[in-house]
Structure formats: C-alpha cells, structure tokens
Length: 164
Image (cartoon, rainbow, N blue to C red; front, side):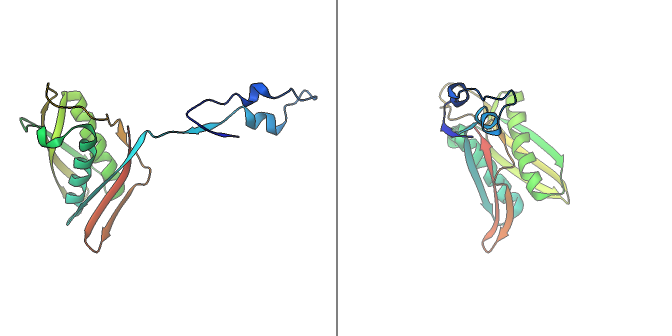
C-alpha cells in the first residue's frame, strides 16, 4: 500500500505478473491505496454552558461559509431534536442547521439553543443568499472525527471536524 498526495496509484499496473495463477499478497495490496487531502476543517465552540459552546460551534461552522456579520436576521428556523449523548447532540445540532439552511435557501448568522434533559430546542436566524454576501467554503456536514464535548476549567468546549 502506498500513500500519495492527491493522485491515484498506478503501481499495480507497473508490477509484473506473478508466476503462479494466485496473486500474491503484495500484488493485492498494490491494487488499493489511499491519498491525503485537505477537505476538512475543525470547529471549536467554547462557552460557560454546554448550550453556549454548541452555539459557538455553529457560529464557527457558518463563519467558514460566510462573513456572519453581514447576514441579516430576517428569517428564523426552529430546530428540535432528542439526543441524550452530548457529543452526538453536537453533530446532530450542526447537521440539522446545515440541512435546514439548505432546504430553506438561507444563510445563517445567529443561533440560540436550550435543552431540557436530552431534548434540544434551538433557533437560527439568517436570510436568503443575496448579492453582497461573499460565499466562503461550503460545509457539507459535521462528522464524528475528533468529536469532543467536555467541561474545562473555563466552561465548556465542543469540537468536531466538518467536511468541506
């Protein structure tokens, strides 16, 4: 197996065939490979409460896509979900925001969130994409990669990697 940078492997085609009819393990390994890419961004939200940290993570994620200070809060979306696990709740929150924003054709800039046990209730405010809003990098989704929600000496920290 080889590691390449943004290219596909052709090492299997360069190998001479094995004398026996059964392929060797090395020949089999040479047919599969992987490559590194820079299609991910980590987002971190911090706050005095877990809810505030989740709001800050949403702000970080949407800041990758747009200058949030230029977004007008003309439309409101309500997001509700049930998730008792705080880490899965972070990914659920971020992905729900992305899905609702896409479905509504909105760009979001302001967020609020509260919870009652494992039931989360949030709002996001924004506007339809318009001329004058500079598009950044599109975030496709929040992932479980480097997912962490933890209490620190300063409050709460919520982090994960988003696919761009």
